[in-house]
Length: 119
Image (cartoon, rainbow, N blue to C red):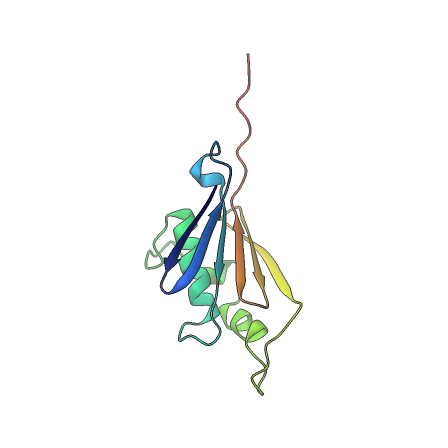
């Protein structure tokens, strides 16, 4: 099953088989480098959507996981306006695997739940 939604003007997709629990869905969003938001703003909102922790909550700080300024600069278009290509950066935020690609795609993979023990 694929569900799509838009968050703050960004396209968001949830991909998961219907039988999986909501918190095991892979989450995808694409950042628009031509838009007004910084890459880390899009990332923070995506993490908020996945974890349920509001970005304004004092417990939410991206700095604990990645340098936001460095991430914004890493994938920003070159000074002549040409996009960066063929790069990605992966890191973990609250046990969620986060991968940011040079084309603006952000993938968040939540921790997988262990199957229940059968007796």
